[in-house]
Image (cartoon, rainbow, N blue to C red; front, side, top):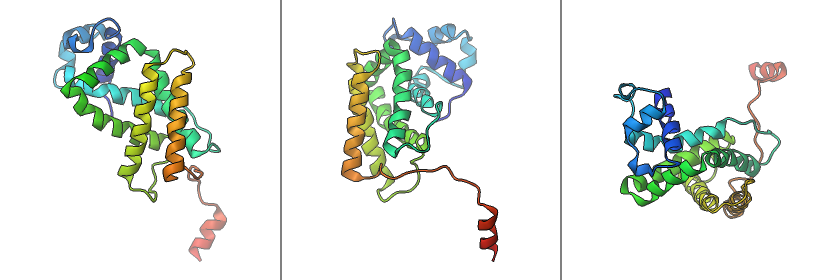
Length: 205
């Protein structure tokens, strides 16, 4: 889910407001004001429901902001990109917690959680270079990774360390389990490289 700048500004403002106001009490007018925009700027672009649906995608964007080492194992890369997301959550902890409480206690929130979890898993695999076809069906991989993310999120909610020790332990443990049970995290990955002139010559002969 790609966010336009107005929606992104609305999400940032909503998360900030949610640090002191319950998510379900936020209004689009208050969000627009906090974002430094007029209410008309959101017309036909995003309402309060759309902003709520966009929070997870906004957090997902953090997973593509860092640089990964091609020599790392698949599990290490996946761990790194997911921790980028948890770091983004921690930077806005109170606001994100307010959103999560709404998400998990309302029918609208529960409905979007299932889809958002799959989208987070899909983008994490892409950012870690693990989105190529594998021996397991894609749906199974997404479901397995979604479970790991959910368990790490539960640990993050109870986090007391600024280093996110509890969250890292939970995430690493779940990724290890996934690797041991299904084996779909094993193997190395390399970014595609251009063919050498010798390879090209051989292909032409």
